[in-house]
Amino acid sequence: MNISPKKRLLTIKQAAEFLGVNAGTIRRWSINKTLIGIKVGTRGDWRFKEQELTKLINLPKIKKEQGKFSKLKKLPADNLEAISDERFRALIEKSSDAIALVTPKGKVTYASPATKGLMGYTPEELKKLTNPFELAPPDDRKSVTKLFEKLLKEPGSTEHAVYRVLHKNGKHIWIESAMTNLLNDPNVKAVVINYRDITERKLLETQKNDFISIATHELKTPVTSIRAYVQVLQSRFQKEGNTKAVEMLPKMDAQLKRLTGLIGDLLDVTRVDGGKLQFHEGIFDFNALVTEIVEEMQLTTTKHSITKKLAETKVIDGDRDRIGQVITNLLSNAIKYSPHNEKVIVSTSGDKKEITLHVQDFGIGIAKEQLNKVFERFFRVGDAEDTYAGLGLGLFISSEIIKRHGGRIWVESTGKKGSIFCFTLPIKRSATIKKDTNTLVEEEKSRSDKKKKVLVADDDEAILEVITLILEDAGYDVKTTVNGHTEKLAQEYLPDLILLDIWMAGTDGRNICKSLKAEKLTKHIPVIMISAHKNTEQIVREVGADGFLAKPFDMKDLLSKVAAYTSKKYV
Image 1: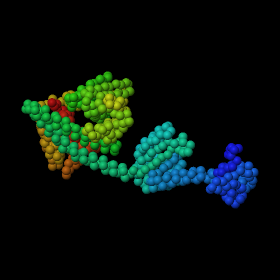
Image 2 (image 1 turned 30 degrees about the horizontal axis):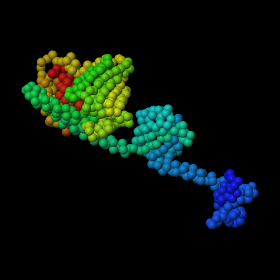
Image 3 (image 1 turned 90 degrees about the vertical axis):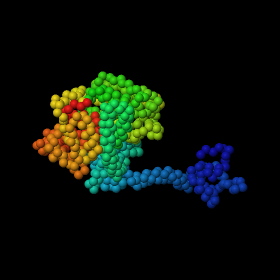
């Protein structure tokens, strides 16, 4: 301590600093006369002469006190570090979430006690594993290992994963993990993995998805009937020249189509969650699909004008209906979210490897901070949930469809000046254009004028009635059954085609189909299974049916399918 020459009398604090001892020691020495001081002022504060203190500085007694004080000064810092370590350890070891430290090679170097409660294994048992994902089933292990390898390339990054692991009791549980790369942190030097058991949550999600699946299945049957009745009425009013009724019915059909879309979105999102979103891949002309959907969407709006700017046509290998679903969703959103601007532009571009579609609108746009959220489920732009109808599922489902096709989907927007939604799809050069249903119908039409016979089996009388109306108007001879005697009636009637509902009260369409295909008289008759069930395609393969018609279907779907299987042209 530096003391000014003018300040020859030092306070207790100054004297303690000068000698390098505790201030309490100076007070004690003053009281017992070990250190001679002077009391000043009315309070009797002690003052010490600097030259007197200098004489004491090298005495053994002072050296001893200096050593004690040095340890005392260091103690608070040591205590703080000890307290901090203890709190951190308590936080980890008392946490319900399991925590593990893992090397780049996947070796577990530390596991918290919670791992035993989570997976049944002690920390020491986990340390013996080859890698932390050894307990996951092969499919799950492959996907989470890829995430781990990606994480290693990006210091400081975090990856989230949901997968199953084998509990020590032999049962699989679902866990959610967050992996953070702290290999460059000198205090950690490891990948930190947090585990959480979400088995109960996954069970609830499964129950929710099953409920939605059943509910949407039940909703599809009446909607199918209503739409078909509307289309039958429209056809009949047209023939009668009732123009006023003809103008009204398409509006009703449009609302039913919207309801069908909402039901479909709910069903699709449960399929995405369960990894059961079905695809029926084939070869098709991409520009032809875009043109078809643009024309359909143009009919839904009188205010907006959809402009096409299509590059050279490309052939795509994929699910035509699913990709069409994406284009429809993007166009529907472009129209919906640009209420005060009538222009929508659809353009394509491409090279030898991929084709890109752009849907541009000049509507409300998307804020910059929301751009990375638009493809999340239930997301709505800005205050859209209070202004625009919808569930917020369309873009989420579209994103999944494009990803499953090996493509990319994104959005560009500059505030309130509109948005451009884009997606790419890979091109397979060896593909050839697949003929659509109408072309096949034209090429394979019957040369006979004899009425084609169709047998329809369904336990819903409304469905039977409306299918009969549609097919009879198109020139088919139709018989129906609702009581499960399909096999006997088929042998007597020998129809050209059988439409068979999969799920009927008191009987099972799957068994009926197997029986029909096993019987000599009926095994040659094509059978089309009708159902809103999500696994219809798989069931068709299992029972040997020839095709399927998904509910809800419209008149065009039904006639197209029947014509294809009876080789009868329809108008």
